[in-house]
Image (cartoon, rainbow, N blue to C red):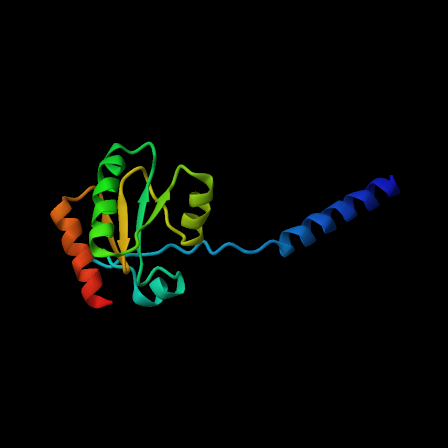
Amino acid sequence: MKMKKIIFILLVLLLVSAASCQKEKDNSTIVLDKDKVIDKNICIEKNLDNKIIQLESKFCGHCATVKPILENLAKENNVEITFLDSSDEQDREIIDSYNLQVLFTPTLIIDCKVVVGGQSEETYKDLIKGFLENE
């Protein structure tokens, strides 16, 4: 009976020490203001500023429509757009590191501004033009 208690206590200690050694994940939610913009300090902290990131999924039809438009605009404007697929395990880890929750809808983060849903090519052109003017 004593041996079982000792083994139990050792297991508990092992679990507690293993849990304390794990890197704590920041589960804070990123909140947008009324203009769908991430607070600049949070944006900088999460390393989202001065970037264009398209969040998408292979299960999203609108994402498939938007991607070639954005790829062409990136080439035309000599700008880098990072495409992250929420259905891809490696991309999901990156998305999680930003503390972003994305459903199967195209979501563009462009220098802390968030645009949800597929947009027209003209809208994307204007967003990229504004991004480049503010660089």
